Length: 411
Image 1 (spheres, rainbow, N blue to C red):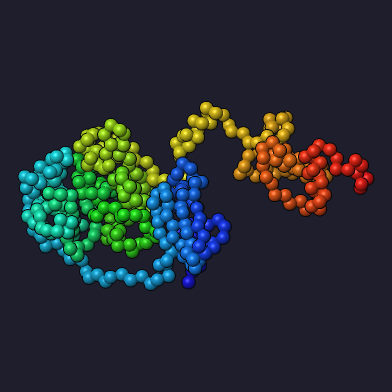
Image 2: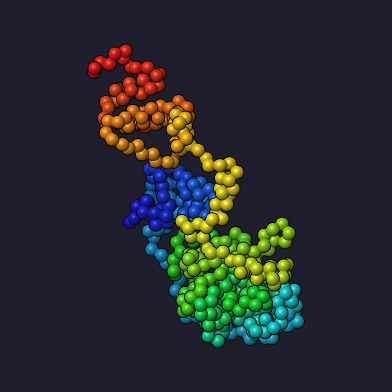
C-alpha cells in the first residue's frame, strides 16, 4: 500500500510541511497554478483525514477536486459485449429539419454531404418518451457505426444503444496528411465549420465531462472514442486545433483532450467574448458574426499552454509596469554608495565571497543589522567561527555603534 505522500505526488500535489493527521493545507494546484498570472497563489485546499492515510482536496480557482480514498481499491468495470450497429431507418431530412439548419446558417448542401437525416420517433431519456429527431450518422471507413439523435422539440440527445463510440466526421480526416485536424464539441459545430470552408473537422460524440479527471487514464470510458479512432488520430501529422465551447465545461474538455493528444501538438481557439455579441462555439459564431469571423478565430488559434513554457505576452502586464514604474529595487544595504550597485530583495540568494580574513563576516553582520533596523527584517544566524555569546556581542557593537568593551580583553 502506498503512503499518502506517494499518492499525492502521483497527482503532482506537493505538501510543504508535515502531513499530520487531521491537518489542512493550502498548496499550488498542479492543474491550473502554472496557467495563472499569480503562479505562486496556493489555490488548492487540502485536508488530511483523522487517520492520516488519505486526503481530499478542492481548487478554488479551477474546481479540480478529488480524494485518495479509493486509490488502493481494486477497480471493477462492467463487462461489455461487442458493439452493435444502428437499426433505425434514417429518412431524408424533412422541411422542419432543413429549417432547423437554415436558422443556424447551415446550408442544405452541407446537410446532404454529411447524410444528416430524420427519424420519426426515437426514445430520448431526458424527455422520457419517443419523439421526432434529427439523426446525425457516424461513419468510419464508409460504414455506419453510430447515430446521434437530437430531438426537434428540445435540446435533448441520445445515441444508438450499444453502438461504438467514435468521432463524428472521422472519415473527413482520412487523407489529412501533414494538415491540422479541428476538434469541436458538437455536430452542428462541425457542419458550421464546413460551411466556412473547413472539411478537416471532427466532433466529440457526447460533449464534455462534468469535471477534470484526476488521472487521465487511457481506459477512461468517457474518452473511448479516442481509443476507437486511434489509427486515424495517429495518422495526423500536423496536430490538433481544439475549437470546443468557451464555457467552463468546454475548458475541461479542452484540457482533457490536450493532455491525451499531447499539449505540444495542440492549439486552442478563442471565440468572440466581447460585450458586443459574445458566443460560445463555432455555430453561434457563424450565425452571429458570419463566416469571416469564424475563419479569423480558427486561423488565430494559439499554441496550447505547456507548463514552464511562456511567450512574451504572458508578461505583458509586468512589462508595462516595468516601463511605467522602472525596475523595482530591494531594501537598502544601509550604505548609499553600495546601494548604487546592489540592493537586497526577498527570495534572492546573496553570496559574499573573498580572500580569508578580509572582513566578509563583519560585512555580513553589519548588513544584517542595517536590514533589521531599517527594514524590520528578521534573521536566523549560523556562524561556525564564533561562539554564540561572542557573535551576539559583535552584533550589539554594530547595533549601538560602540565597542562592547572600552578596551578589548583579547589584546
